[in-house]
Image (cartoon, rainbow, N blue to C red):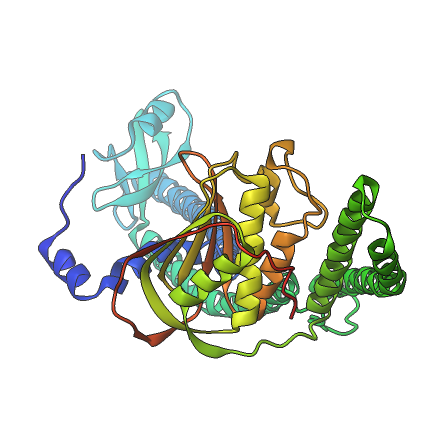
Length: 455
């Protein structure tokens, strides 16, 4: 059952929406290393202070009882001497048949023994000493109220000292743990930068023998350097292979065009075109990986630009412009992205293929079997087309689209629709000025198909 918040909290949440988010995030801070170390140090200090306090308390209490028992025994011996000489207890602190004597001590004396016992006296806690004298009980009472007061004062002093020690250690623990946490956060941030594509990022802690965090940082730097070297070697190999194949490919293209017309010649020309497309795509990927490409950004109306891009693919696509906006983008690279997404939808999905433009967002959807799980979890992979239901291909189209999208600062997402089909969404950085909202429908039919557009 949900309980209502107090009125003051409802007013605070209405006035400051960030209050509720901050209040919910607060427990996360207590799971940080800084607070864990600080709380651990404070717990250790409190545990040590409590243990020492208990030991000191027990030792002091036992010493007080021992001293009181010795005092009671001495006074009882003096009282016995006085009673044997005078027949009375006058002039001593002893009494006969004291009414407040502990029952267990009284029973012990009645059996003919002498002894001492701690118990309640006439005015408070006391140490009793008693022995039989002529058929009667002679006893002395040592008041222990002052000793117990001193013991309580000692306990309070030790408790205060423990609190002061915890108050001093807690900030020191927070500062020490915060230094370690900052180093770990810096290492985690560097790892995230490497994951984001900054392969030159390093932690760089230096040589610190015996420092575990420095050892981890050095291992991460070595791993990043090794991965960077392997990745650069792979990229260089891809670029070299694609570049070296261009010369024999041009000769192959020329030779294919010189063949006499026929079924075999058509098949050869088709395979040559596929090979040429593959090599051009490999060169494009190598340039994107090397980071030598630069986007030529300019303000463009997104709706007409997407319609023109789809029209030039020569494929049957339903284009819907719900709301167009002016975006800062590179038209040539956006054309490459849209063309690859539309071609991928036709090649691996099923019609109808629909392209929707709404503000700064472009969506391409088909009615096929959807993207494979590996693509949704890991992103586009080179030379991997996923499941057999998605068709055949080199698996480079979506990889190129993703690289071009990053170059123009756009986000490219891949999801599967709940009712079937694959959805690719391009989110472009927009401008403040937006055109009038319109809704137009364009049906593009087969037209002059153009080859892939390369930057």
